[in-house]
Image (cartoon, rainbow, N blue to C red; front, side, top):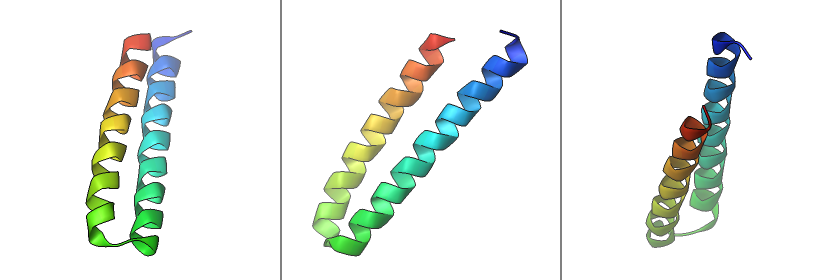
Length: 59
């Protein structure tokens, strides 16, 4: 694979992860109180950072 394609795929993966987290947070905000939102947001951000780190290690 060329470097440009690899960078594109990494960016696409990061964008997809951020979009999923934003959707999950928005959904949780609509259905729960603020206490649950803070807990779930912390978990979502930790999972997203782990995902981004793993994607970075692949390349």
